[in-house]
Amino acid sequence: MTQQMSGMFVQHRQGSLAFGAATLRTGWTWRRAEIRIGERVWTVGPTDRHRIGVTAHAGDSPAVRLHPQQSHVPGPGGPVRWHPGHRGGELTRDGCRIRLRIPARPRGAIHVDVTGDWPDLDLVVLTAVFALMSRRRHRTLRIVAIVGATGHGPVG
Image (cartoon, rainbow, N blue to C red; front, top):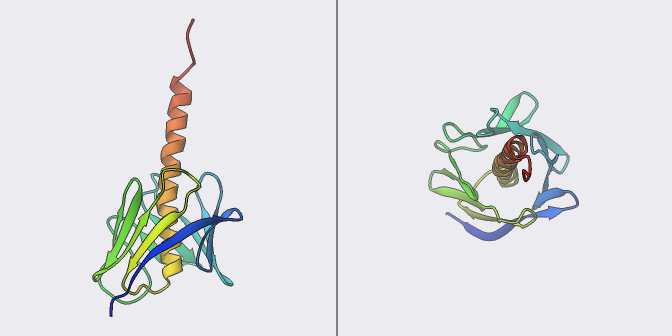
């Protein structure tokens, strides 16, 4: 049986992003993060300098890997596809889907629609949020660096 859940949100709460009982805490550059679910902790970070791929791992092996060319999430099933975009992303496997929509304003809630059963949903959703927000921060910091290097204010 496939279930459809919509209207769920990742909210800003006390310096973290929260989804259900899980929290995502990161620094202002979004280079690394930590996901906590109860007593369990995963370290989250990019797999490359352009932040296209990310992994969440506890110990040596990744629990979640999101990359447009090769992804892995917990649980049985076929191949997983990760499609990140500018204002959101989508994760699909065997007819199941997680769709995230990032608001234009930085502190707004992130909308999450889920179709089907996803083991460790909180971990997968917060890893996807990190992937999207880390790319957004990387773009912003790159733009600021370019403007800072080329813009010298008004001449005259």
